[in-house]
Amino acid sequence: MQQQFDQIAQAVSTQSIVLADNVQLTIKRLDQIHPQISGNKFFKLKYNLIEAKSLGYRQILTFGGAYSNHIAATAYAAALFGFESIGIIRGEELAQHPLNPTLATAQSLGMQLQFVSRQSYREKHQAAYLAALELRYPHAYIVPEGGSNALAVQGCQEILSLQDRQDYDQICAAVGTGGTLAGIIEASSDQQQVLGFSALKGDFLHAQVQQYTDKCNWRIIDDYCCGGYAKTSTALLQFIEDFELAFTIPIEPIYTGKMLYGIFDLISKGHFKAGTRILAIHSGGLQGKAATA
Ligand SMILES: *Cc1c(COP(=O)(O)O)cnc(C)c1O
Image (cartoon, rainbow, N blue to C red; front, side):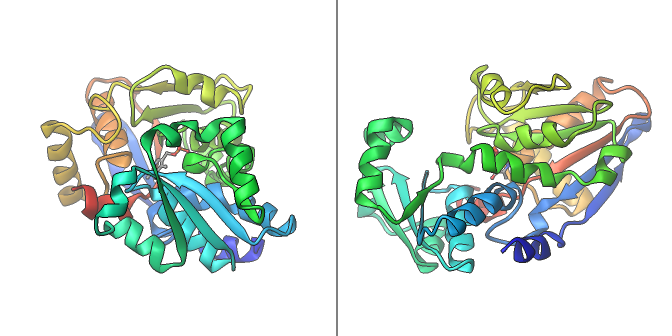
């Protein structure tokens, strides 16, 4: 499995963009890993699936919203490595409607979809709820919403290569639950700064990330979240259109669009000193793009 994962990860390339003020921006294209298990989700699942296999589990169970990149990635990776998969999906009402492309693909890959009310979805981290799930699905290895746990952080350390630790001063990444950023921070060198662009509002993410790292060379900002998760603004959507035209790199409005919008804005405001070499992690997420556009 390890080998298979490492082979798939070889698809990643980097693309440099020359910008004014001597600031060099390079994009690490984790979106090229795979159309379904794209980007950071691939690294987050790696050691979880290896662990599930070694413990003898036959199924992977996880949680997500109707457009979740994590659900799409889990359905695909589970099938690829010979697991059955179960997706607990937020929103009972969805059972009444035709499946959107994310869920239709997950189901066609064999994921068993279980729609639950928003109220019971909120209990997904609680011990009693998890104990009930374990009773109901005794053969399932449970991965938390968004896929963030210690094994996910271990996998995300592999996003940065040794070369990346030397060639850049500043690492930027989009933040949802914080697992990806934590792995990047753990892998970064002490000379590097890590900046997380939050896809949602709130200070709680700092604590989420801190539970996985003792390092201090990092910060999360939510200045470019456009008011909250999956919210957008005319300026953000315009930026994405202009960026895609200029650089022919596809991005989406929930994570990577907000990060790059933020990076470009900070550069234009002189936030980075001249000569700064920035590595921005393109964490993928393009499977949901058509559905949410
Ligand atoms: C899930 C996701 C993120 C956020 O990852 P976390 O580890 O939850 O912070 C960033 N970018 C994309 C494209 C994602 O799908």
